[in-house]
Image 1: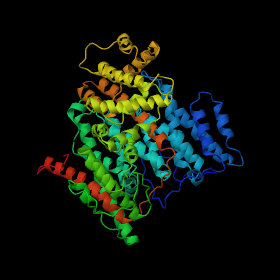
Image 2: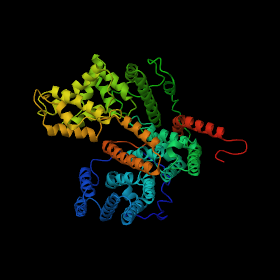
Image 3: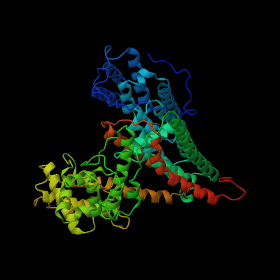
Image 4: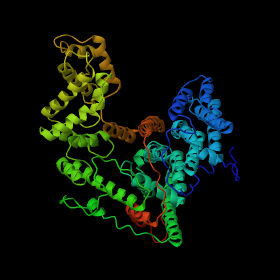
Length: 615
């Protein structure tokens, strides 16, 4: 049975982002079975239940919880939570909105919020309950957190606050995805409304009031080699808003001067509150327990230098590794070592972007990769480590044995089985930008065609056909999507250009037309190019309706990307790092000090003798 909260349920609007409690210990990975129930069975039942319109799926979902495995009260809580989350996932019809659909979604979200606020220790410690949160509740949260309807968006923010308060140890990856892929992108968008930005700033302000939560955000993400620097990005974003770095060109039709002033003040309050809460936390920790000295973060010198001498290292490496995967340890010294390690990796990435050969040498010297070319291939395959796509393309196209081995390893690691040629080509070309030299392109496409023909026997007579057709698709991409080309290639012309390429025979016309439609409807382009194009559209948008349409496209991208990351990280085992040492503050301050100083400098410059900053 679940005891009710003694304080009662606060509304999501009033307590959407209540400060999280202090974690007392790291959370161990979930066991293979939860209360005797196979997690994969729960996943399958959840997927069938949520993805079906047949309410009878509730019976199938309920059937996996036998009386011996789980008590009836706990079972009912799981079924209710799953049902309410499913109801909240239903789409709201486009304007004019159906008020009944909005009311139904809002009530469902409020009931989810109430359950999370009132759940007791049994549910909080239940692996099955956590599994339902990960598979259904978080998906509902992400989808509804980008809703243009204020009531739904605000209630979703309340759910995030409840998850952060009660389940942060078990939802480490999911909380990071919500902050990075949803909240920060809303703040950084030139198309999001004032209400969206203001509500997200309130989330960050509440987060900054609790030093433990903010510090653990830094420890679990910025000090993990495999994670993004979420805390650093949050501080940079708050700093830019406080400095007034919104461009009037992007926000003139959405945010009024008075509203912009309110956003500046709220961001500044968040920064001030954060530093004050951290100082108070450090004082309490010092009084309760003497700090343990763990040494200076010496890798800072590497990050600030131009790296002329790559043979020297000012820090001691914790271990030699053949990849970039590094588990976060709960020990204080290990946390700081991981932060140093991550900074070294960033130095190597920056060196690669300036001069690829030197970057690879640096990464080898610091044991991120070995001499095996496949290690470099796996590094490039990750795609979100900051490597410049143009530098990768130039490096892979070099006619040197080691570079060619890296290229072959990258291609051989791809799985093209059962895919259409345009789909495989799109995935392959998403990892780098094609170089300008024809010989480099030939080498890349020759290897790609060889691998595609190997993975899909019988589609083409030989690899040469895949090679020629791949080149034809690249030219079609340019012809269809280059704004400077007026006379577009027609479908008949594309079919005619590819006659006789299949060992002297013609490919079926239906197959070629399908490839043509695929490239026309889904361009073969880099994510970076699409983002640059979107920024130009944002700057060119003049009316509020245009901004709204662009923001809808952004939210669709947010939801899609978040779900992709959730699927990727679904099986990853991670340990939550609790903030328990005052020494953790040192690396945090090294990250936060520069945005703080920049904000202070701008505000002092804006102020005068008769008025404080912001009047």
